[in-house]
Length: 316
Image (cartoon, rainbow, N blue to C red; front, side, top):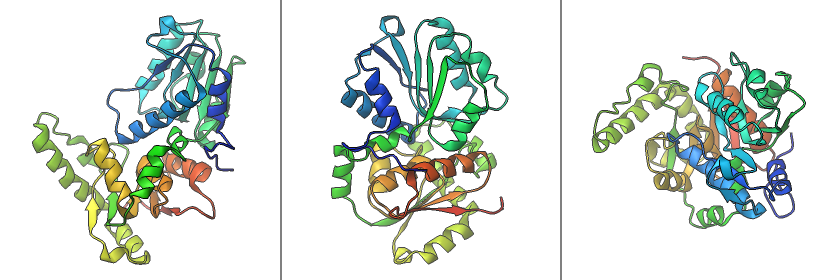
């Protein structure tokens, strides 16, 4: 699959589509409030498109001629609220066309076709990987629904001032080991020990301890990767799931200053890729791993890429 680059010469399919409808007043639904740092990176990419294509944004659907829903990784059975949100828009504003920025789609138990047919107004759905595209195509959506594939919105930051400035100040101070500690990762029972009742100044250090415990689950894999990477053994290690356990500013800084990144977090790997870092994206076949591999194959693979996949063969 060809990689889409956001440059002056070659815009992504999603970019070009938004350019084609930029004369319509647009209500931009940002997404869930519990966004992590990867979600913030996605938002930054979509906002760049909206600025450059000249889309006029309005504050409410009532003032809009179309609705744009933010991209991300929510359209799968474990996140039913995403499906409920699109159903709400179709029911509440049946005359408004709806656009979905590049998303993961894993249509399982949810009757997505029924949701899409709540309204017959145009519905444009962008998948961010080939598995998501096939999932949409297999749903046999109506003629008013169009589907296509375009890169994850975070890749829209390629060539931006934000990325250029980070590259100019980049260094190689440490190895970042960032493994998921939520319900999608290998943490299991650890993922449910949120401790939200604790004060933030207490909760955050405890979260960092949990980051190290989660990384230990994949300890043999991590040691093997570091052994094979020239110079990595001499660098200090940071064990932290910076997608969720630090501020956005810290998330960016830790990735900017990494000499090697080992992660199963998609948007940690994407920002590392954008900064031309050495990234090892750890994945295991299954729902989470397929999401990682799908985006990697579509947007991060290639002879010049410093990002590679490392497959775990079992769950031990």
